[in-house]
Length: 591
Image 1: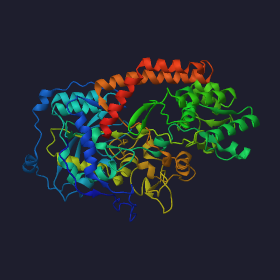
Image 2: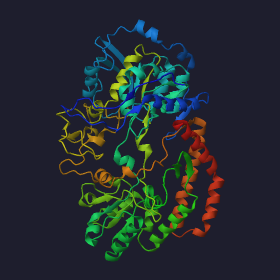
Image 3: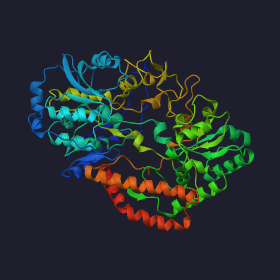
Image 4: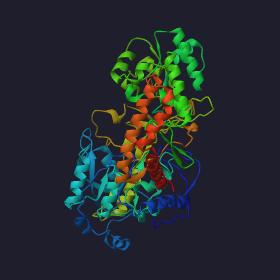
């Protein structure tokens, strides 16, 4: 178990960083850290002795670890730390972290957009604020990073810390087993203020965020992460063309039947307009109709029901959703081509003059199929939630868009793990996140005026002064990475800036989509590399079969009288084992 016990409760108040602007307590209630660590510890007890494990969103990676080189680098004890550290540390949690020179060797993937990491504005800011000089080992940003890191680990000349590479869970465990990493347990209580009050208090990440970095009773990485409200709550949502609503003098649909009535009226008034369409790559038409009957995740077809994982594509609610969708196809309200056409075909269709589609159901990736500067885009509104015939209503949630990341790691070669941990905790502060993601006050952003709303519907923290540094072709202001920070910071950007609108985020707020989150979405999972391989094979087999048969059923190529046969086919593919693996992984991170 994790050898940590906390007795005090921790709330959150953002430090007065914004020129006197004081944010109200973020998450509305204090959290007992003892309880949080107990959750993580319970997850750890399930992990101990079961080998390498991994987060379920990743493909397993096999690492050859030179254990012999690892054993030569003994982990420093707290007593050793007191004797060897010569840097003059400041008061607990304060800045700078040190007042005497201290250098940390950093291995980090560097995006090619970054002009010079050593002279980068963010690099200099970090060094000025903390007193720690960063000496970089630049890694390629992309598929080659894992290979480079494995070579470093086997080479024996370790950096002090890794920043920005998201270590898969099984890889993290392998390196920990080999003695190549330094545990961070001893530093969480005295120096983990932002870890507790920002990361572990973020409802999208969860109070048990430490479980994703914990193995064999120790914490091996500083958790980071977070997600944009648009990615979490609008990935699957269709968008309706409000021009047609106004013309037909119809209210905004809030139920599935109301949507059907709108599409029927549109089809009658404008036979040349396609009532509802999408493209085969991201077709969320059926997903949203099924969502009105039961929670429907098109990535897994799994949901959480009171702590129990359930498969939803073989029940009566799923069959009823298929029947409803087929009726709409037969009535001409849903474009049959939506299940077969590619992105280019739909983009060509939408590029024609005027509005020619009533409802676009390819999620929030509008830029793939239309010009987001056109009036047609500006007149779209997402259909956040639709109540079904039985009164069921729930927001669709993309939990994978707000994953816990493990990209802040201290190696066993580091002589100053405490200072490294404090540096990591500094990275997790929201004031640092703005600098890392956006830039600097007075240059890239300014404090938002009172009453201006952010993308999350609350008081905005800042307003952009320039085009986002993030999208510039090159930069020497930021590191162009958000894997090492609390990466939901753009939720606090002003939602409407000048003539550029963000209708998706505004509608998420206006329709109170977040309030309709029923907690049925599957969270990020942890499982062994072997189980992960089996889980992914089953998942790909089963979900591909479901999607293929959904198209066949709703297009009339397969009779719904064969639904029971379809369910038997799924059973033969291993649905029970698929559920079993998901349940065990869910229990690991929640119990």
